[in-house]
Length: 218
Ligand code: C5P
Image (tube, rainbow, N blue to C red):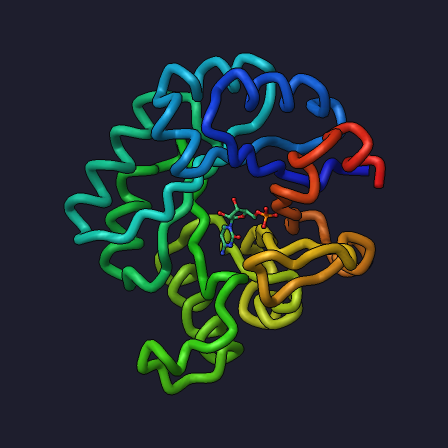
């Protein structure tokens, strides 16, 4: 079966990230490097992790004016270490298109829709329900021709109603343990029943805290 899990290496140390990656690399599709680890290890660290033979998902969640996003995506593309990069779909079409122009075919862009830690967007003045907002943002991703979106596993069928082609990466995977700051969650068992070929799980703390080898088996 195709490997389905991207592990979030949410560490403040490159050594810890490499050690964990080596232990589980045969069980996973790739690793996700977020703002914390990237701040510590920079592009050199990305290269070291890439050399382990894993796909790299750089989760910088870019959200800025189009020109700045375009230049940042071009800089990341020039590193030649990154397979997937996140941008916020709420940056709107022009920003997404600028990102796509810079990424070309060298990086796959993934658009964050509504964070899995958010369960109330009315506090932001957004009148749409979460589902309607996700649909709107997924449509923007399609229009800008980016590769995929980040969304809760609870939204997989909604996103598939928008597009059969988008890749879907799902954080907020929890199997009965503490949900921590995640709100719109699903267990890995239920996720794997509904995930198609283009749908992946993004899992951090349930794997990296404690023994990652045992946690992956669980
Ligand atoms: O530890 P946990 O499994 O909650 O980690 C989820 C990871 O996915 C974190 O690295 C977080 O930054 C990321 N993420 C998320 N929700 C999004 C996009 C990314 O939780 N919408």
